[in-house]
Every structure is written in structure tokens, then in C-alpha cells.
Length: 86
Image 1: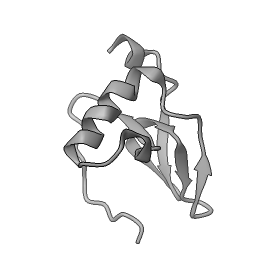
Image 2: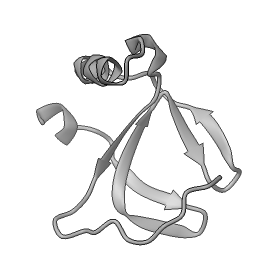
Image 3: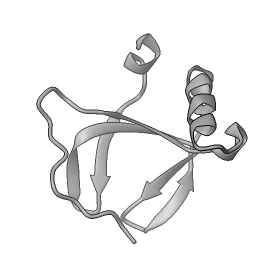
Image 4: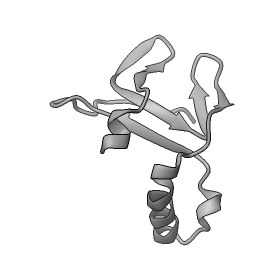
């Protein structure tokens, strides 16, 4: 948790809306204003063990998981109605 607390969180933006959460992306970041996946820094060492566990859970090589998103929700924040892009 100490590593997570030091992350450079920024408000999540979706077109003209600001979501009720802050995020940090690794491997790629989707820009909803131009509808494009942009490169980001690679998955940091402190998430590698979690990536390995996730890869084992879904039966894929850990190296196949190249993106990660860490989201911070303030206490009481609900995940409201939304629609992901196609």
C-alpha cells in the first residue's frame, strides 16, 4: 500500500466528463478525446507479483499482460451507470 500511496494519481476523464475516481495507467492509456490507446510507462516492479497471479488465474503467460490500471475511489464513491466504448 505504501507504493500505491505514492502513485501520481490523476482524475479519470472520459470525453467531457470527470469520473469520481483517480487513476494511474501502465503500458497504455486510452485517450477518450481522440479514441486512441497511447503508450505509458511499463508495469512497475511492485505490481509484477500481482500480474503473475492474475496471469496464472486466467492461464496466460505473465508477459502477455502488458497493461495495468490502478484506480482510487474515495470513501463512499459508487460506480454509477456507465457505458464502455465498443
